[in-house]
Image 1 (cartoon, rainbow, N blue to C red):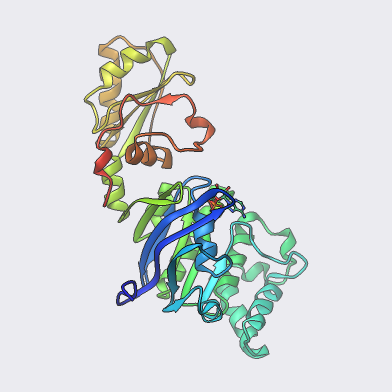
Image 2 (cartoon, rainbow, N blue to C red):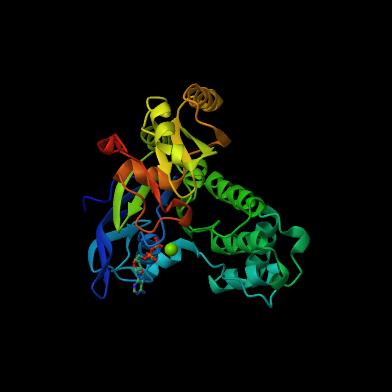
Length: 340
Ligand SMILES: Nc1ncnc2c1ncn2[C@@H]1O[C@H](COP(=O)(O)OP(=O)(O)O)[C@@H](O)[C@H]1O
Ligand SMILES: [Mg+2]
């Protein structure tokens, strides 16, 4: 029982899963201490949902083993289900019911008495800021409200471990902020949380530890701080007045940050990491002016998942976002500098 380290609420060891000939999971190892938040960070197709489905007993792994709240997901699925809450990428809310009715229903499904379910629903409505909308049909809710209702439902039974699969995908910034607050609430309660996300910022904000999943494997894990340190602070992105000056721009910006600059030929932009914030932005503009490279626009932004993947794997994501196409980085250094 090597995986039952004291205090680990979720343990996965060498989980594998194939769909037809295709490997979705190629040996996933995870260990999440009780009362902490793990973010499973990865692009579309990385295997996040498959991992969540195995851990929540909705899908069997082909190989490896896993336990949740001390129970084996294959041998004790009912015990696991009794101890977890799950909120999917697509909120499981009955639109014909009001928020209050939805929560009472879920609580009753978990075996609570009528009175206990009523009290639990009232408590959750309050905590998730749904009090004012409690008696309106949830079909008319905004995306953020719906997601909060779904989260509240996942908590109805006071689970020890909660799984949130892309809780903020598709939400606007306000809905995202609301969901983040809801997750913070969970954590304050001592619940163990495993959430999946495609956003480095979200992992940074919510998680104690991050596991980066790529092609069904954990390619890096550690604290968000370690991950960010390995990826190197923010990015300065400069739009060039003349895209053909990209080579000259890269030359001018070389040596400015911890990693080499890269050009996106199609967009006519050059990006260079910096660990000096706005100072780095100014230095970049100065260096370009000195090299007589004309700049149309410039911006400073935190690293994205694309940047993490470039740094950790030396290549763009297998299924990178459209904005990532055509971007080339001469070399992503520190290939082995990923957090262990
Ligand atoms: N039910 C399924 N049937 C066939 N292939 C699947 C199924 N579920 C997932 N996959 C494949 O497994 C890989 C991982 O998928 P998934 O776990 O959904 O990734 P993510 O949630 O990170 O986007 C993908 O290549 C996906 O197409
Ligand atoms: Mg998914």
